Length: 143
Image (cartoon, rainbow, N blue to C red):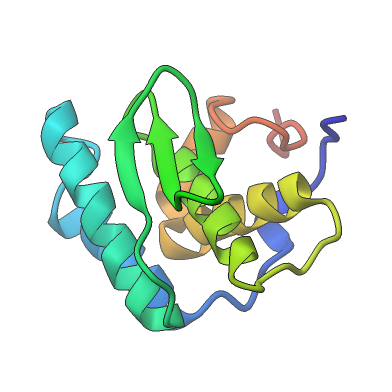
């Protein structure tokens, strides 16, 4: 069951290296400004760099009709270029390799991905939250 929580505050300690990689991919490489094929390539680059931070193998990424992490094949499927969705599915990859803070794997993945967005790009996060573009968060404070 999906519960509304302050997911954006549940991982205050994401590595600065990971946050810098996210910032670089979005702001310097233009993740939100490129066409879909290049966006998928940028997410692959982000996965490779984050994997090197944690010492994990890099999962593969394919375009598919829905979002998922295929555990045994270490493959992520996404229907579109989405920072939060790509980070959410990557967190499932981290869980496979022993990183799990919260017992519920979906809560854990949701919290890590939304927290990473908030910490890496706070102004963009705030804007997206204000516009209701981030699921599972309470209403934006002040309306």
